[in-house]
Image (cartoon, rainbow, N blue to C red; front, side):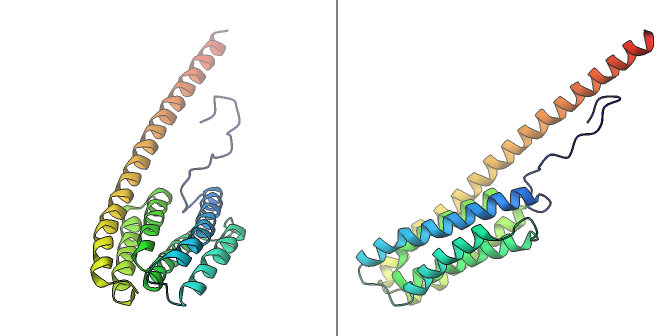
Length: 206
C-alpha cells in the first residue's frame, strides 16, 4: 500500500507458481538441476550395484540428464503452472523406472521428488496427488526389480514412510514461514498506512 499522495509500487512476487512467473522460473531451474544431479549421481551406483541393473537404466539416466537440461532452459515465464506438475510427474515416473531397472536403492530419489513438491506447490491436494503418484510408482516397480522381493520390500518399507514424513515436514515448515511473512507484511502495511494518515493530518493543519 502506497502512502497518501505517492504512486502505487509494482506488485511484488508472491512465490505462488500459479500466478508468479518468476517463481515458476526459479523452481523450474531448480527442478532441472535436480534431474541432472540425480542422473549423474546414479551412474556410479549403476556400475556397482548387485545384481547389475537391466539395460533400461541407460535411457532412464539419459532422460534424467537431458531432461534436466531441457527443464532448466524451458521458458517457464510463458508456461502455465500445469507444466510444473507435468515436470514433477515425469521425474516421479523416472524414479519408478530406475527402481524397476536397478533395484530399491533408487527409491530414496523419491525423497527429492517429495520434498520438491511439498516446497514448490501451495495446494495440499496437489502435494498429496504427487505423493500418491510417487508411492504408486515405487510399488508398481517392485515385481520388476532385479533384486529379491524380500530386499525390495525391506527398502520400500523404509523409503515410503520417509518420503511421506519428509513431504509433510517441508510443507508444514513452508506454511509456517509463509504465515509469518504475511503477518509481517500486514503489520508493515498498517504501519505505513498510519504514517500516511499522520502526515496527511499534519499537512491539513499547516
